[in-house]
Image (cartoon, rainbow, N blue to C red; front, side, top):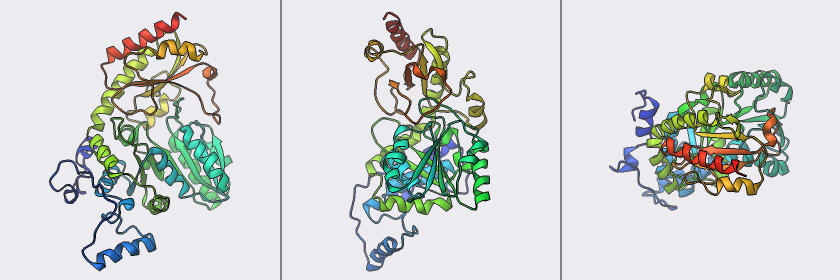
Length: 407
């Protein structure tokens, strides 16, 4: 695409990352399944040796060795950078590996990291169970923390890890105030703090994290980018200041995205806008219906007017994902829940989300989590709204609640 032409996001999704030199006339760039890439001259070969020796990225967008990238990963990274406004992006083989390369690039023995208690639980475990033994100190913070974060920042603080809305409980902080407080304290201490943000729920269509002075956006592209529950993929969008460190982190750990997964990511990207918009509209209908149900104490979905995070959602987001949680009226045993969940016709039980199919799962709040929600002792169910007809989904949920009532 002509970089001088400013496109709307829906148009960028269709046209970004379609380099003609990679595609050879195909609408979708075919998967380049190759580890070894052959060179015509010694000069070309020596360029890749220079790259390995210096870790400079000047030639990393050329197809040189399978682990360093393929035309498919270059195209996906280019497209995602255009969507997010990033300097450059890095594609990885899962959302978890995207988190890993983004945070480990800036942490070392003795480093201090602040991590939201609302983070995806495996991300929290990366800090405590993997980076902890290497001497990284992690402190968990409230998902609604504001200016008081300044009191927790010390000279050793190198990174702040944020996710909004929170996993399972869907809180959203006042993001600009939070980032401003981090920057002010960092300046006072004369240190540099990298702010990372997991933007999987809303994605670059509904929240532009890098426009809010955030350094790195992390996305589980397994979800809405792939969109069909058939590939694992991660993306890290970086500023010019952070890109090389993240790229080196990926290279040094041997983390890369397979060409077939990138092919599926690019394919999914083309329809992501229309899928997410349709699912967001359906999710709002389901959420409003759920609020009226006898067995539902609270619906945790920021776009709802009743949500405690609605004001912050409205302030920063232009839409959102179709993932939400509901708090039931009491604590149900597994055998009681099975009466409801085992007999759902449309809602399936399974990890992840972002595909065309609706999902329903019980969920637990991670051990590090602290929340003001009194009902957290009650059963929490996570719902993902897919592309099915809304009336069919509501009928399926209604039947499930009726089964639960009879217990």
